[in-house]
Image (cartoon, rainbow, N blue to C red):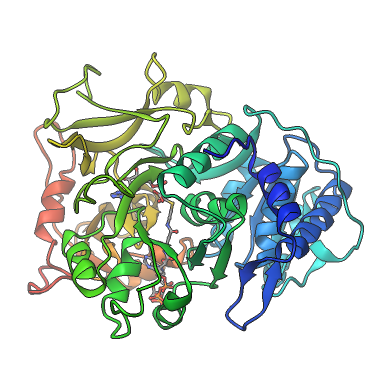
Length: 511
Ligand code: MLC
Ligand code: AMP
């Protein structure tokens, strides 16, 4: 296992060892070398320090995917800053919440969104811009910074917002030690080396694209076939030149529809990884039949990085399972109430402990304490069981969460917006099966007496405040929500009622 202690240090070593190697290979045929990337990191580091970033300061980034965006991440680590990536799909309101909570020193945004932040700039937030081709103020100067903050394993490296098991978005604080430990475990488990050429089509504002895919390439000295987003044609064209693909299940569902996905095009590939949401067992099997490759499914979450993986070698990759704990990580399945470990085979709450597990939620010590056990295990909010081979199977979520195309949507956020409509008494937002996104968002709404709000009007009412991927794809108006004897809304019953809304055979609309 490689012994590095921070992602930045390991990247610098790789850049010294192989300066002329292409780190990024771009769709237009351009390559960006390790040397060039290291220079860009130093230039951005100088700029961040000039902007007043001191160790521990947050640097927020809401930027398009570019080689410079990865350099911004590395530069933040170099100066001891705390990187805070934000989904480019977030609306102004959503972004405002994260900036207000995390109080960054600098926000780097896309040039076309700079004017949204005029008021914040007046209040002291430094606004920098970074465009998709490296344009913008961030790289205005040529000055370079070579000093590196001597980060210890416990120093915070990044904050990523997530809802945890309940409520409003919380910032998960990940340390340099968390990132390095998880990356080392993955390099080792998946036999990832400098010879790898990884197709990178994921966004870089979540852990899958940033802390799994990018970190592994940066620290192994590997190359990235770096795509701005998922594109089945582009991926199929790249497969003969690549060795590894990492994606969410929607990647595989879509690739299976592409006639160019064959055993021949995949002959040079050594690994296909899926995660962030459940991979359909049917897709796993169809992919193996078509290409000869068994997709390797793994399980992680923002607070913990990766926890378990199906084997690279030495055992079957079993569809419907997420494998065994990574080296150094412990997993247990317990009774949610008592916290007592359950025998293998029984379904319970999944808990995890290890060097990959975050230190806590940003400025929320009580919420943090509530999600850790006294012995240091973190309560994931996922439900699962250990099978006869010791593999973890995820069977559901204890947390109220919809995962659409690998993006998490918190029903409560949408319900609160819907409930503010003058003709709505209450609402329940659920996830239902979807052939492309795995799950999609559906809102079930109870109107005020005599009112008949149109589904389209309700959708429009919430749309302005929500990133597109959170928009309900269907709205159903009903007389009452199903409740149990305690008065709690029975979402499972609603999910059952609407389970065929998007998957054939489509049931007639039952408004
Ligand atoms: C895009 N849209 C989505 C969506 N992505 N809607 C619901 N869910 C999504 N995930 C919207 C678009 O805005 C568009 O709206 C319409 O749906 C169709 O867009 P598309 O062009 O078909 O989508 P595309 O851009 O191809 O994106 C789909 C996707 C992408 C699945 C490739 O969402 C993606 O890359 N997801 C990966 C997310 C991820 O990295 N998750 C990891 C989180 S970390 P309109 O207006 O046209 O209707 C984590 C931990 C772990 O979970 O274990 O890894
Ligand atoms: P996030 O909060 O975005 O990090 O999402 C983490 C959640 O994604 C986990 O708690 C799981 O519910 C889910 N998840 C991640 N990987 C998988 C997987 N392989 N199968 C099913 N669910 C997964």
